[in-house]
Every structure is written in C-alpha cells, then in structure tokens.
Length: 223
Ligand code: DX5
Ligand code: ZN
Image (cartoon, rainbow, N blue to C red; front, side, top):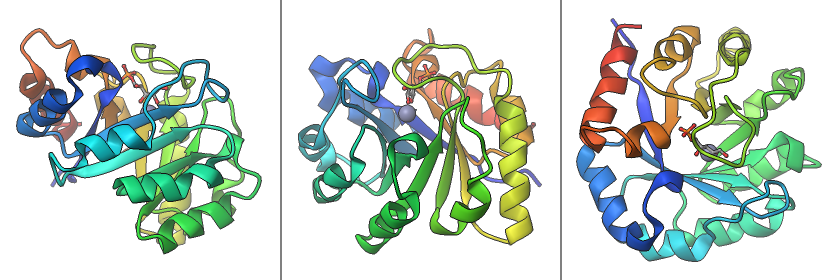
C-alpha cells in the first residue's frame, strides 16, 4: 500500500503580476499545500515575498500555507508570518542560533514547525532536534532559485533522516525542496520523502498545472 504523498507547489515560479489568480489555479489543479519561498537578499541573494503577500492571498484558499523562511534573524519575522496566515513555518538550521527554541515558538503560536537543512550542512544535529520538528525539510539545491538540478546526495540524506525519525518513533514528516520533477520524484519518495516541493516543473509543464501534479503523484505512488 503506497503511503500518501503531499505536493507543495512553490509559488516562486508563478506569475507575480497575477499572484491571486495563480493561487486559485494551483488550488484548482489540486496542490495539497502552497509553498512560499521567503528570501531576504541576505541569506539568499534574491528578495521575494513578505507577509503582506501571504496576507493578501490568504482569503482565497484554506490550503496549507507552507512558509519557507530563507532569512537571517527568523525570530523577528515568525510572528508576522503567523499573523499573515502561515500554517507551517520553516527556519534554516544555518540561520538560527537556537533552532529548538524557535521551533518550539512556532508550535506555541499554532503552526507546524519545520527545520530546513541545506545540501552541504551535516545532519548530526537532527538527532537532537527532531523532537521539536513537525517537518524536516531537506534542500535538494542551494536556496535562491527555482530550476536547479536535484543534488546527487539528496536521496541518501533523506534516507539518513528517515532512519533517525523512525528510530525515535516520531510522526515527523520529511519534505524535499529543489529539483523535484518527473525524473527525480521516484528516488526521493523511495528514500522516504513525504512532502514534495515543486516550482518549475509544475509551472512550466506543457500540459498545465493539473497534469504536472498528476504526473508527480502517479510516479510517487509507484515508487
Ligand atoms: C529554492 C526554493 C525552492 C525552489 C524549488 O530556494 O526554496 O522552493 O523554488 O524550485 P524547483 O522546484 O524549480 O527546483
Ligand atoms: Zn522552498
């Protein structure tokens, strides 16, 4: 029996001039979650959406807003994104002095807590931090841009985190962000991923958003 896989479409590849319509189209196409790539021009070179953008489209859907904070000093922004309607908030291990405290704060504010790890960052801290996480997100690419290739060590890292979660008997989900498409989704799921983020594959699919989501789901189901 294949497990349920969730797809979180990243709005980073949407047409920003029509963000409201894009949100409605992605919801209509059947994305489980909507992924918001928040970049600050410091932790990552680009700058993207702030809480005002989430707040502006929040009323269009009740789908889970999966908010990926690629920013330094995330503690300052967490309350603002909660207020804007985030359902899950992800902080980077590389950007937090005390990730456990921030993850607990996210939970206390009523959101799912997610810890994100960049491809070159060692995974040793996960053992200690996993109990604070509803989700652990492994980056398949360095943060900053959509459309980069899936890193060659990503699936091995998913398996490593899967082993830690299962050994501790926790319900923590594993999310994978970056490089997910019809050629990589099977190995990510086989390695133990539960949630798949996709930006460019969904938005650039020649048959449209629903066909892209359906293709990812079908391959994931048989992985
Ligand atoms: C990268 C972002 C990813 C990215 C994924 O900084 O965190 O969410 O948009 O894009 P694709 O799916 O095109 O690799
Ligand atoms: Zn992301």
